[in-house]
Image (cartoon, rainbow, N blue to C red; front, side, top):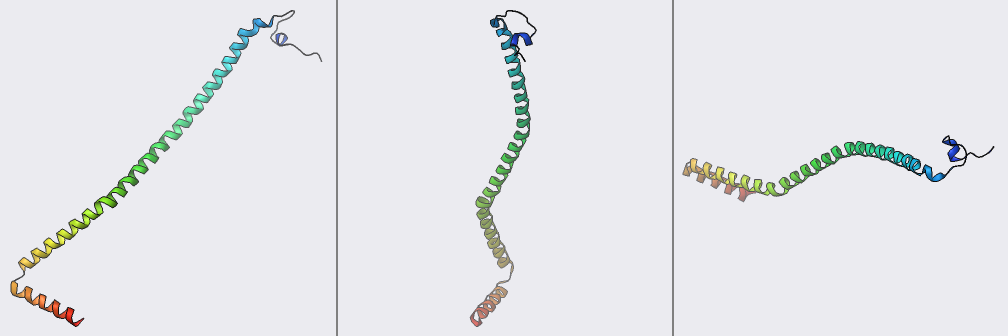
Length: 117
């Protein structure tokens, strides 16, 4: 089987100067590169369309965790202080409303209970 030349496959017969095919070869080469580039570009856009929402979701999740941690560490002691201050205020209010004699009786009862225990 005789080996056929590139020129024969393109339909050219006889003596051939292969430099005439350089523009054709370049055109074929760049068309294939363009097609491959567009395939890659579409693939890249598809991957980007999948990746960006996941990235934003992770960012949102991380921000939420950071906020919860900050509230837990910074605001919790403030809430504890506010709760203690509210309890002291309630205690003072209760003591101001209870008659003095009755309050003294309650204190004596508590002291006697603590001495017994």
